[in-house]
Length: 366
Image 1 (spheres, one colour):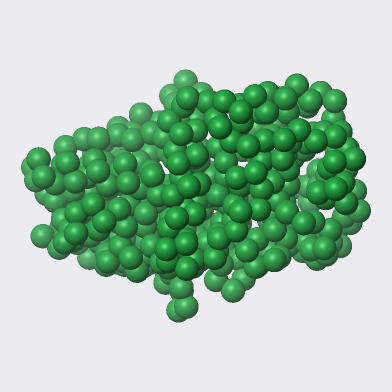
Image 2 (tube, one colour):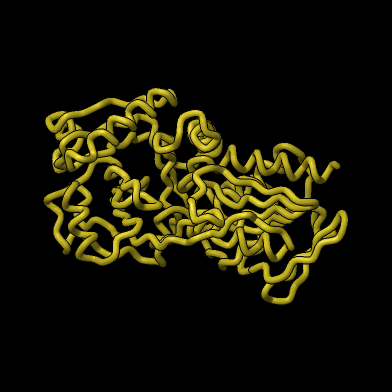
């Protein structure tokens, strides 16, 4: 055996799983396969996490630790989001990863959106997330350039340095991380699994963990398992705001319930730059108009296409076409498939990674 547990996928959740394995069972031999190449300064694990893909300087992912306010109260996804925020703050403090609790505004720019904004307030209170309702004058106190009919302030939203976080998880896991290693074939026998990479190398392990994100359904099928869902990948365009002084903190336009992901949202990252993401806009003109609904002073010249590839977001869809809005894990003999996380960015990475690691360790010991 080359290792005890072989993790396919070196994103933040895959790295969190490797970290949890080392914490829960020291001495467990873990190998992580990440299909993208290594960065000479910091690993690119998590490069396509969230709507923000790779950005210049090697920073990866959006780095947003969200509050979970958009998820159904009482659901596992909502609980993991709330827990994940606390665990992420503790991890970053322990390891010196830049982390800042910024809070955010969720804004309604049209009257038809006001009932949905009020519903979010009720959700937040049921989740125990601090929320405050704001009128136009109060909004301007927080964000002088923002125009909206109403907003809520969510106090627990935070941002982290996504690249530093990925690097620290990789180090603290003690795992062997192989970059540029794409899983192309999987063969299983009782008590062992063999994974062939695109280069022809074969690695053997006792337990397979699938954290492949947008490829998780395909990896499950490579292993001979039916994931029960199909993964759809959505492209997220993102821009840098040439005048970052226009914004003080994160802003989300109220999500459109007819779309699978949030539309326009603006993030002041840990580096002080402002990044503007569009989840499903069809063109530059439409995107600019959507941003101007929130920030009227923005012009097309203010939005500079960010360096690096567009981000990808995965959404699991059931055979009947309904989207999955929950953490979805499939277990088969010798394999744990994390088919859908349903949490953006780094929000629930640590508790999800711990849950997956515990399942893998039960298999390893059983």
